[in-house]
Length: 306
Image (cartoon, rainbow, N blue to C red; front, side, top):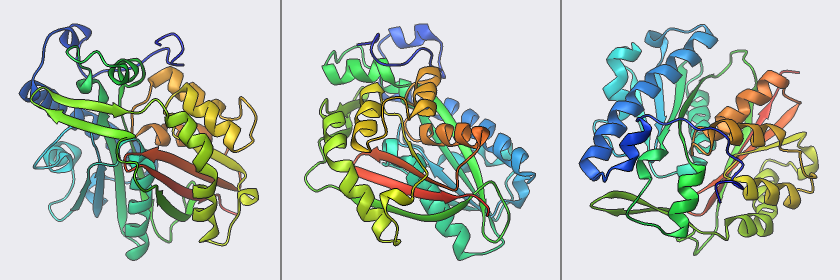
């Protein structure tokens, strides 16, 4: 299972030996708060520096994380180190899982559009390794242990300002009666993963109608998309999406590279793919997609400047 995962390297907030001892909910929560806050500061600082904006100029922070529980939420805990001003608005988002990066981008874009001139910072932080369970040797947990890693990503959104690209449209599709495909079980030890082995088959069979419906609401079709970009949930999911979209094996080259270099980091992973696409040169229209608990497909269409 590890050999076929497509993952070569991953990152974790704790030393390897930490994961080899029994850990309960309090210890996992303590590690989540420390690791997630540090990653939040690192990712937000990098994004703001790239945009030429100071943290004090940020008007709204959208924080996406589903791998730990924090009240006050992460952006409040990290505000002093990050440098936010006292009037910054906080929008913490929980429960979106692997779809969180794309759905978070959608939420942040709508907030930016609603108040032209304001600065919205999106930060996705996931500490997936804290859900590794030595006490639950189920197939789902073994798959999760082979796939998931820790990571964070951030980006800056502003309405009416030139940038790397423009959020053209966004949308979601929720399939009925699919709550047991992906999610968490919560017990005294922490989170236990719900990860149905049928996800690749489900994606191959159902993703086209969902994406077509989302595009159709904006008057677009599949043929209008120059590059599909997906959250690389796993090697089999990538293969399934390539077949469903009739792209041919290897079309999702950046997705495979991110999976190999970082593993599945849940929400931030799609933003890692987007960064690789930006570095290689975005085409005119890119459709960024992800699937997550619900079971949900989330899409954001990105247009480059004419």
